[in-house]
Length: 267
Image 1 (cartoon, helix red, strand yellow):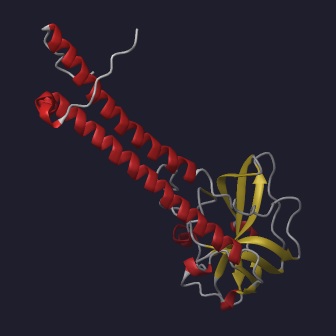
Image 2 (cartoon, rainbow, N blue to C red; image 1 turned 60 degrees about the vertical axis):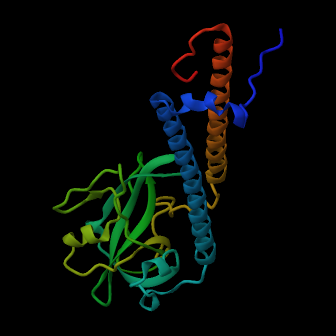
Image 3 (cartoon, rainbow, N blue to C red; image 1 turned 180 degrees about the vertical axis):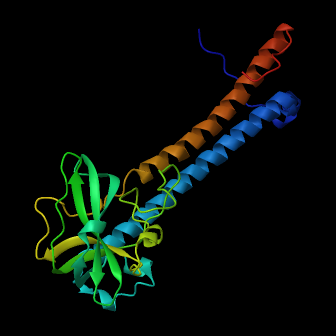
């Protein structure tokens, strides 16, 4: 048996559409519209994230392997413009004040980053992320005496939604992030407003750990495919609304032809 088809009503049969303004159908329309708007916005959100990712990748490619400059020549008042640029600086490590930055991972391993303050000749302190050490190992002490450090400038880290918090007071020997403003509380000397990820030092740091922080992933991720999916979902929802209306009109016509009362809710 061939399935019965229900044509879209013509202008001469618009009275058949009066059911679409009943309260339950209005609720159905609003739900569909809200769903379409939400999915379209999610699609554009993914496209914005893709643009942000591309900008980030371009920044890394332009700065990551640049020749190091003296820290004194870096404009530390503009962290956004200076982040990821390599710098070189001399000083002396304060081994006793090292801080373990926890909940880090690298190369598929869980571990910690070791943050050691470097006292500079101008009286300031530079926080140096000496690198990653797996949880099963202990990071060796930093080199003693004068040391020359090459590292990439990084902006201070901030707590994001859902992340663990550090205690508001007291000396932190273990921390969730490199929050320079929070860590300033445990140093008498002023901290440099950016920290560095260690690239190399003279004399050398420990080997093989701490392991230098890995280069950021420069892939674009799945943002584009997610955006396409959200747009397709919004289109599918619109098509579903059309099919639901058309099906309901058809069933009402069949019911009317049989002398039956039509179903009061959308099917």
